[in-house]
Image (cartoon, rainbow over all chains, first blue to last red):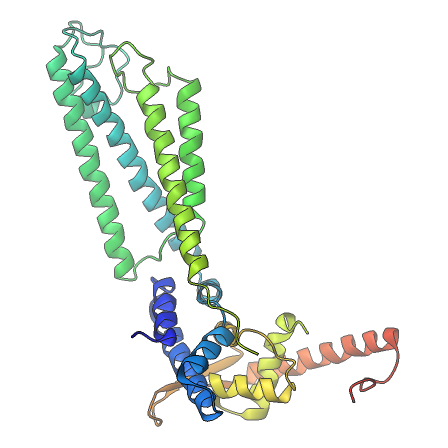
Length: 247
Length: 110
């Protein structure tokens, strides 16, 4: 059975991710402190469980201790870079989802010929914007799907490299409030797309609906997913908060 | 009693009295010498010590002579000077408050 002290140290370890040598040192000191406090509690007549419970509770919430350590060693620009990096990766996933959804819509509701002006990202999608002769629907489906897969691949590379950089302690994790900020940005993007269906970067879904409908839904869904992720992190942090010491 | 605003002064003072010491002993010393008034989460002492070290007021090194290696802290000359300044500031502040609220500092502590 894992002891309360070990559970606490595991949580502190998780929360100190990306802090490098300072985090390792803090973890060593916390372990030494808790072992000494438990030994002292047992020597004074407490049971092992009660001594561990009291030592952990007196030490304070892992989130608070880790937060203070992060503030001492905060590397503002690196944390900002890490947050922006993550936001770019998630944004590209939303963009690729929009392309793939557009491809599926065109494929499921085939239209033999489509007006082509107003297409976005012609360099990515094969330059079929504003061509004098309309392209066959199949070509547009293929090219849009290809663009979606290519952007998704690019997003995966960005996120994997970031993950590697965090594990290698080259950059710290994103700010704790990242989920809230990213969710808000996604929500604002969905609102913008809803009220500006003629925005120049919007993909023409070519299904007779407002061209921004899919993009709006993708970004709205993105804001919900990121928001739920942020709430789940908050709930998890709350649940793992230690109890008060016995008096 | 809220000790948060005075943690740096308390740590510098405790280190001056105790000499080179590790975190747990420092916290026990704070708890006993303050007669229970030190009621901050004990873990908050370590970030505070690292902050003081970052500011050059405290230095530290690993002590590997015990069964578990421990980080031992001690005051730097800059820390000693900072302690003297903060102690003067605290006494001035305490005298000002005392002059307003009146009575003897130990009154009602029996």
